[in-house]
Image 1 (tube, rainbow, N blue to C red):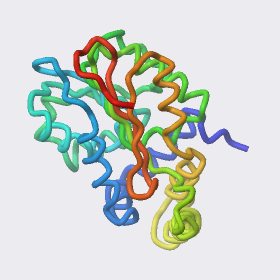
Image 2 (image 1 turned 90 degrees about the vertical axis):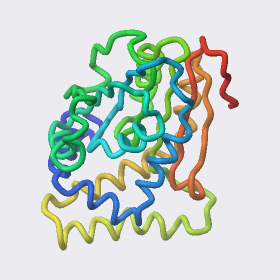
Image 3 (image 1 turned 180 degrees about the vertical axis):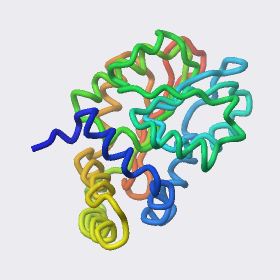
Image 4 (image 1 turned 60 degrees about the horizontal axis):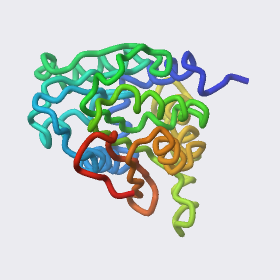
Length: 246
C-alpha cells in the first residue's frame, strides 16, 4: 500500500489535480476555502520589517497572495515553496502573471529543503498542512522556527475534522462520499481529489502543530473557523515587542 505522505506520492496527486484545483476547491468547499485564506492572513501579525520578504509554504496555486499583498502592501517578495510544479504553473498562468516580479518559486520537498536560517520576515501556509503526518509536522515546526527572523511572524490554516459539531456526519459524508463520486463522474484522475478529503480527515486539527511550534519557542495562537471545519495557528518568533496571546 502506498504511503500517502511520501513526497513523491503527494507530488503526483497535486500535479494531476493542478489543472482543475482552483475551481474544484472553490466550488466544492462552497467558497469557504477563499474565506479561510483571507482569515488566515487576518490572523497573522503585521511583519515589522520594511520591505518584508517571506515564504508561502506548500503554496499550491497561490490563492492566498492577493489577500496577503492587499493587507500588507509593504511586502516586496514572496517565495513560494511547493513540491508540485504543476500547481505553480497554474497559479502564474491563471492568477498571478502581473505579480511575477514579486513572486519566486522553489519546487522542492519542503522538509528536505535548505531554506536559509533567519531569512523570512513572515511565513504563511494555506491548506498544505494536511499532506504531512505528525512526525513531518514536527520537522515543519522546526523549519518555521529556523527560517523566521527574530520578530518574524507566521500564520497557517488547514481544513479540519470538526469533532463535536452536530453537523459533522454531513461534513464527513461530503468529504468521503460526495467528492469521490463527483470526481468519478465528471473529472479525470479518479481518486486524486478524493485524496484531499482523506488528508483532511486524517489531519484532525492544528492543535498538535500549535504544541510543536510552542516547543520550538514560538509564540502561538490556535484558532477554529466555522465550528472547527478549519483550524489555524498564528504567532511570532520571540524578539518582537508585540506579544501574541495563546
